[in-house]
Structure formats: C-alpha cells, structure tokens
Length: 634
Ligand code: SF4
Ligand code: SF4
Image (tube, rainbow, N blue to C red; front, top):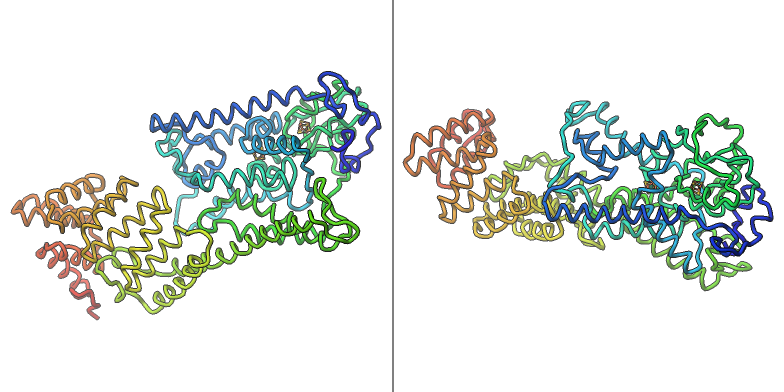
C-alpha cells in the first residue's frame, strides 16, 4: 500500500476508521503502523520445510530406486479411473477431511505452489510493487469447474458411455510405493515454465493468490469444503474496525467487513494463514469453532467490488475458454493446470488492453499506462507485451487446431498394427476411407509440425505412422527417430519399437536391432520389442541369442502366438522336434481363429525362413477364406 495500510479496494469494501492509517512506529510494527505478523515466519518455515521434504523425497527415490508414490492431489485421478490407491489420493482425501473440520489450512501451510506465490509476492513488495487483486464474478468458478472436470467427469463419462467397457468401480490395487516416481509428472523442461507461470506470472497480473483464485482445481474443492467447516477466523467484541486485518490479508479477504457482518470470516478464499489474527492490535481475532459459512443467510451478503463490468465478465469467459483450448496439450507439452494459469493471464491481458484502448486514464501498479487519453510509454510497453502473449496464444490455438484434426483422422484409420507391419508396404490393406483419412491427417500434422514453435513428439510419431502406411518407410524411420529424441519413458520406447519393426521389414536388421535395444532399455516390459529384437538377431545369424530373447518373451507372456511359433520354428530347424511340437501346441492355443491373423503369422515366419510353419499358417488362412498372398478368397 502506498500510504497507510488501506488500499483503494479495501476502502470500497467497507468504511475503515482513520485510526488504521495512523502509523505506529514501535518494535514489531511495520512502517504502515500495522503490527508485524508473527505467524508469517512460522508459515514461511513450514513452506520451506515442505519444499525441502519434496527435494528429499526425490533424492531418496534416485538413491534407493523405490519410494512412496507422489504426494500430489492430481494422482487421485489414477485412483478414480484405474483403481490405483496411491499416496496422492490418501493425502488429498485427508486434506479435504481436514478442511471440512478446520477450514483451508492445507492451502495456507502445505502447498508448494502457494509457497511460490508468496515468494513472488514478497519479492515484488521488496521492489516496491504491491500485487493488486483482480476480481471477477465469473472466473472464480474456474477452480471448481476444473476440479469437477478432473475428478468427477471421468467417472460420469464411464458410467454413461464407457466405450472401453471398463468396470464402473475399478478394482483397487496398492500403488503406495513406486519405482517410477516421475511417471505421471511433466518433464523438467515443462515443470519449470509451469511453476514460473503458476507461481509468478499469475501473481504479477492477478494478485498474490491469482493462481489459487482463478485456476487451481484443488482449491476448487478446498474452497467448497471450507464452506462447511466449523473452524473459522472469529471476532470478539474488542474489534474496533481498524482494518489492519484486511490490509494484511494476502488472500484478498475483506476481513474487517466480514467479521463485522458475520462475526467470522466466511470467504472460502481464506487460507487460515493466521496473519490477520497475529496483526490485530488488541487481539480481537481468533481461530475458533462455530457456525459454518453454509448456514450464513444469503440476504446478509456484503456487496463486493469487482474489477470488471458485466459485458467484460462475459467477454472474459469467452477469452478464457478460447485461450484454455488453445494452449491445453499443445505440442503435447502444456498440462491442464498450466493451461488454466495461462488462460487467466490471457484473459487479464486482453481485458486490460481493451481498457487501454477505450479508457481515458489507466494505470497498472505504479505505472501510468494512459493519461488524459494519451497512451504513455509504459502503456505501449504493456500493449506490446500483451500483444506478444495473446499472439503466442493465437498461434498455439492454430497449431492445436491442426493437431486435433490430425488426431481425429488418426483415430479413424482402422488398420491393425500387426497387419500393417506384416510386410514392407501395407498399402494393399488400406481401404479408400483409410487412405483419405491418412492423406487428410498427414496434411494437418505436417502443418502443425512445420509451423509449430516446438517439436510435437506425439504428432511426429503419428505422422511417421501415416508415412509408413502410405509406403514411405524411410521417412517414417526418420520421423520416429526425431520423435524418440524428444520423448521419454513409454512413448519413447514405442517410437523406437515401431522404428525397429519397420527397419526389420526393410531388411535393415543391424539398425533395427540397435533401435529395439534402446526401446527395451527405456521399457524393459515392452514385449513386442523383445519379439522383434529376436527377429533381427535371427536375421543377423545370431540364432542362439534370438532363441533366448523369444524364450524370455514367452516366459513373461506364454500367450504370445508369434514368439511361440518362432521358438517352434527354431527348434524344428535345429531338429528338436519334441520341443518344436510343445511350442507349436502352445502357439495354437493362443492363436485366434482369424484368417488375417494366420496370414500375418505366415508372413513373419516365412521371412525368418521357417517355411514349414509358414505354410501351415497360410493354409489355415486359406481355409478361413484368405489366400496365401493375403487376398480374400471370395
Ligand atoms: S488453491 Fe491450489 S495452489 Fe492455492 S494453495 Fe490451495 S492447493 Fe495450493
Ligand atoms: S482472512 Fe486472515 S487467516 Fe484468512 S487468509 Fe486472510 S489473513 Fe489469512
């Protein structure tokens, strides 16, 4: 605050006695005459300890290779959708329960994003900038809508449509301990901008709790639970409406007005940081139990001041939605929470720039953007930043649009992978509709890749598949290499597997073997890569090693029809007929009664020189009305 302890907005919320601004210069008091918060230091210590604990958790996992699964509310999605009972779910459930009783303490004392927001707020104040809250009537519902979308929508979707025929209530399994701690987290290259946008950019533009108020889905549930909680900041008759509490509150709560009206703080944005209790000159505030917010009559509501007019609110919602859809998932990089954070900032910038054009006077922090109808230097700088941000958003939207249309076309192609990978050129299996979808989809993916600012690893992978289906295996191999360079974990393993499989079909077995080795180094359990690796080894003349690799694959999954056939073929060629028969019987049990499947087996065995077994499968394909060349016997 520039003078005294009371902002313009605060004055607008309710009358504040002049005593509030009468500076007190004594130890333990700030320059504004407000007593310094003693709990602030405790809270800072708690938040630093929390961050240190998070770092220790990661270090422990790196050293031991196994640890408690991430204590992160987003992990609850995997519990609700797949039945994985993990530490994140246990934490979130306990946190909501605690909020229902004590109010929103978890936010104020136990959130690492809040720690970043506080750090940013502290830093800005140090350089003389006091984040001013942005107040919207409609955007405050974003966190709750986000929470319902994240946690409730998948359950509703499954109970109504359920295209994958999953059980309504998943089978619960224990995932409290994990060896793959980072599996569900974005890469470091995404995590850093994510924390920067959510922890710093939102504070600068939207106020000290900008992310909590307009973006955080967990806050949506905590805020709702807080309304039912009997634990509240309450007031004694000693309160003299000095306003120190409101001036101190970084959650933009009109504390003095609420305690006057209701005898307690009812705003669900109150994070129970206890600063207001600590700074109150005559200890008139305390934390105590009593009536929850939900029982406060609506007719008593305090009139609030908002930053936007109603038309601006509506435009704001449209801008928010557009920006969210534009950035969410673009380049397969931007996660849900980051997209919400970006969209709130875009909305603020768009509306402020609109005002810059229309208003006669406008300021931002201590900067005069426009004065007497003339845009000042600071105004031009603001407009330039705003245009760059919004332009980047629009460009992301354009890329995302092409990614989505490409994805749709990709999903419409019906050709099974095994059939496409049975021989070097799968063109003969493509129906006209498939071909049209591939050509269309390739166009969209190429546009997204050629004009995007970052490589989209998922798009490259799908584009590679389209190229392969259209007969350009070399281009597919190259694109899969590019995709793998940007990927990690399972998706990288898959790109390398497909690359290896295509190289095997092309007869480039040395390269195929290297690619499949890398795929298995990434994901040891990728059984198809093991099967393919056996084929490249066999073709390279390293037959004993090939047999060991197929045997290892079958040991992991005895139902592998191709690997069992390959082991049978190898045993037959080595003259070990009993062993061959045993593998063949095992293979037959796992082989579906499908002409195409028999034809695929025949092709793969024929390539390996296992002619007798190949013939057997071609004959079975023929009996099932498919010729040995794969043509329909109709
Ligand atoms: S609202 Fe979200 S970001 Fe804010 S403190 Fe709560 S959990 Fe953290
Ligand atoms: S009302 Fe008081 S306890 Fe709640 S957030 Fe504001 S300062 Fe903290």
